[in-house]
Every structure is written in C-alpha cells, then in structure tokens.
Image 1: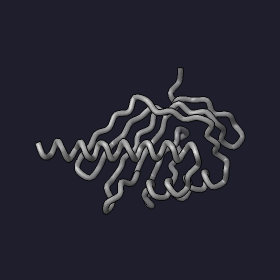
Image 2: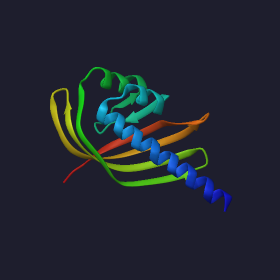
Image 3: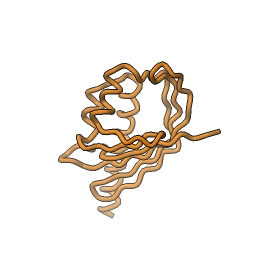
Length: 130
C-alpha cells in the first residue's frame, strides 16, 4: 500500500512538471526550460537529429521557434522508482524558421529525480500523419 501511495505522489509530480513544460513552450519561459531539462539531455527530433539541452535552449533563445498553440492529449505515464516515462500527443501550431507548423506529434520523455527535482534526461518526437 505504501508503494502505491508513493507512486501516486510521483505521478502527480510528473503531471505537474509536464504541465509546466507545456506552459513554458507556450510563453517561451527559458527559466522553466533550464530547470526541467537535465544538463546532459539527449533528444531525438522527428528528422532524426539528436539535440542537447544547449541546442534546445538556443532554439528557444533565438526566436526561431514560435508557438501559437499547443495542446496535450493521450498522456500515458509510467513510474519506476526515481524515473518516469511519459508518452503524450501534442497538437501544435506556430512556426520554425518562418515555416508554418500545424502538426500533431507524439512525444516520449524520460524524467529522472535529481536531488529533489524532476529533470528530463532523454526524449524523442515523431510527427503523426493523418
């Protein structure tokens, strides 16, 4: 019973982190990105490129990525001790390098408890067609 209660607490913490991340995308909050992304993050983009935290932060700092709207759905979270895996569908509109974005993506993020804070250590994203 104690283990189930602990998992439920972690599940709520991860849901909160995910909500903060989505909001950070919407308002381009670099402080929240810096807080939630692990310094050694590796993330695979839909084109196969692997980026780091520094590269991800640069895309937000540059203004090349502009999010008009972003909505999450179909979220699945699995908790394993000090790790959590999140799979979520994101509907996104905006632009990247002046190219319009109006797409649906499926993200996978791996969160790890570092000290007392949850950080994304890895992730990937694929474009959903149709």
